[in-house]
Image (tube, rainbow, N blue to C red; front, side, top):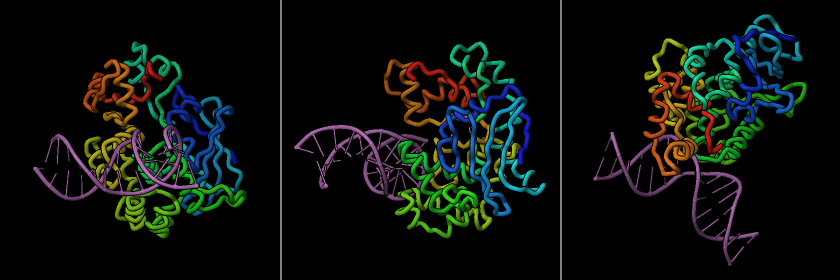
Length: 292
DNA sequence: GGTAGACCTGGACGC
DNA sequence: GCGTCCAGGTCTACC
């Protein structure tokens, strides 16, 4: 089955894929040369499918090698639109960024969309996996989660979907810590999964545009394992760019860009992008750093 | 509100 | 091969 989804121009699938490192975290797959994106998804019916996404004129085509009901097609359409942020309008950002030399490649490349997972649950969990560790370890933890606890793709059981909150809850903290190698993050992931599984926490509701950003940030910070950096990162994924995800890399880049390599703190990072107002986080994200 | 120390893993390094 | 050091954010206790 093939599904066509239009995208608001300008649109570039490779730009979305490379918007950050998510595309290398299971169950995403991407072949750099082809500029295509694959994702193993578990539909709400429990069916596990492989989504193969490629850019075509006016948007993307989604290929699925499985028979699908109308409802399942609609679900896939909703998810892919969200994952690739197909409807987002960046024209007001481009309008103010076009005169900034450090954002020229972003404007010319139609950048701005940030790849995200189908569910906020998956993005929150993966964000926790990025904290206080090296990127290689984040990749390993995500792969372990999928390989050990995800449902298999029937046509290729080596490939698996992202685990459900229920399967994570059933696995238990000890398994997550020792076998999935999440370390001290295990209780955070366990608590998150448990609260989502029992209905106490509705993360999907946080995708609503009606929640003011400060309130949204407050709710994200209330999650165990989510601090200032992680909350800002998640706000970016939710299309809110008022905060900068300040990590050690950000401190280093700002230090080299504007302070001759002298150590800086989060305040200097925020100050460097203050003039971009509600697009602050995106300007930081797309900045053409001289130290890169 | 600010700060120090613990948390945990894995890579780099020296022996 | 083994031991040590270090990087990476967040949490908790304490001031």
